[in-house]
Length: 436
Ligand SMILES: Cc1cc2nc3c(=O)[nH]c(=O)nc-3n(C[C@H](O)[C@H](O)[C@H](O)COP(=O)(O)OP(=O)(O)OC[C@H]3O[C@@H](n4cnc5c(N)ncnc54)[C@H](O)[C@@H]3O)c2cc1C
Image (cartoon, rainbow, N blue to C red; front, side):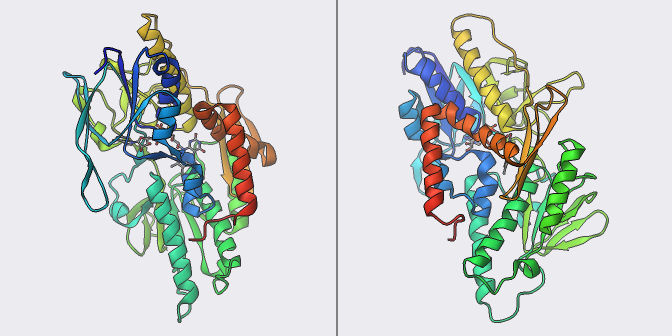
């Protein structure tokens, strides 16, 4: 083990990968510190793209980044494994063994010593303990889950296309619980994809007659976190697409036939997707005496250091950072993870030099929701100017720019430009959707 400070980042997602890259460039390159990224996966796909992977409008293999390659290019180490615990006395991160599909060990259980630890393990869907959700819903928490959704969709369409008997009512219906950005965007993507699949030869399926898309939301309006004007615009767009929106409907049970709500409604659907709220992974709950909240997020101070340990930071969805006097915490968004990653990169460099640490202040640059190829709506500069409603082409460009900023933080603008060009060329020569 070298004498250099050991910096460990756990979780290479929207926040953690940007942070490991920045620290590798600033400290690893000049051998001022050893920077190690630990992730449970071998590749990174930016999470806000997962609904496109699920619908098949994006092939995850096109947009994935190999951690080992990124580590080599940016002077940090990558270690594969899932963090399961923490030993604060010995200052070690506990990582479980990684097994292959046959259950054989690829990488054994390990411990990694840290001087500075950043936990950036993101979040998972929160089923709020509602009966049947875990067993009967699909989730979009990981690339593997999004890919499984896409394969199931294609399999069901192929089966329906070739079956002898007529398509049963509800056989191809999809019910999405949660009308936040994820649920609304997924509904629009699925509308687009089912029409395209039908056009690609599955022509015994008439999407207008055979595929009903439902979005179910407990609040009085969809996109409850966005201004009412935007909800109204998105509601009108979904109505035009024939998506059935159920508001004021709290889900109380999910079966393998459909979704039951508190008002007694039962919405039959073969595909049930849960996109209603998040929590941090369970292993974080009260981990090694650190302070966590009721959804397992690590409580952090404005410096993003955990409330009980200066050497441990948390960023992104797994961090609870108070942002106003009412005690609201920073929302679980890619833009927050991006901002926090750049602040912690500065903070760690300053700390090594014995300088005072900067404080984090969430800047809400607004929220954009894209309804597939049909439209994009959103508000810009949420807490800067009130909010400015945008739609159409400008909204689409701003929506795409969030991902471009992430890519630029990982690769620089030149490579981001080349990747964007490569993406457009691939789109020009390949089908618009994944067909297998
Ligand atoms: C479908 C969808 C659409 C979204 N759209 C938007 C959007 O348009 N705009 C927006 O701002 N936000 C959006 N979000 C939210 C956004 O994706 C998250 O807020 C953001 O990814 C959080 O970043 P993070 O770094 O905290 O975690 P993540 O990006 O989730 O990364 C967590 C990483 O930790 C790894 N990991 C997890 N557990 C462990 C462990 N125990 N050990 C080791 N590694 C572990 C994971 O493999 C992953 O690489 C969307 C989310 C979803 C699901």
